[in-house]
Length: 245
Image (cartoon, rainbow, N blue to C red; front, side):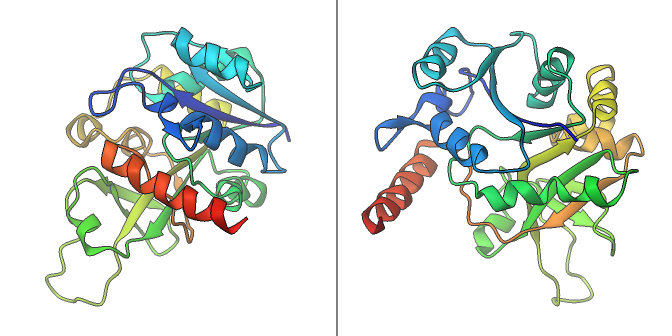
């Protein structure tokens, strides 16, 4: 099975422009993500997919595989779809470019369902929420699954509501996805779903269309960088790790 890792990276961002090039201890954020992805032995190749020449230039200078894609893409999954049209593979792993602390073993977890069940077309990761503040943070999608960890819904709200029991753990999405070529073709040739438009969570397009989205629970301490404050948190973590080496 040929498996490609793709890191979508765009320069424009409403909350944090130029985020992939944000400096973390002397290296741009996208470099840190790429280095973690390269450690995943199941990945045959890893690419950064961008629409910006500044990001392309930095990647080439740092010997990072980079592929230019259209500026018209509305989501990272659309960008992965263009990569799939140019580089053929059996499976594509979408690794978010704003998670520089992502663990290689976490990425591997998104691959495993496809080796165990040939009917799976889409996978996504989730992790238990440990900080209560994250439960009410609208930037963090909460994941709701059935007993087999098949995705039922994702929401930016606090859900499910604990009316009958407090014996429940909330889960947040870890933005590593696995897609077959078929799933990517569907996504790139379909309109945004009704609920996807409301929540602005692209994985909902698959759930609304009846795709089985297999969720895998992982233990992950990764920090998604959405704001300057998130970046400062990541820099502090990286500095502490470097001091231990």
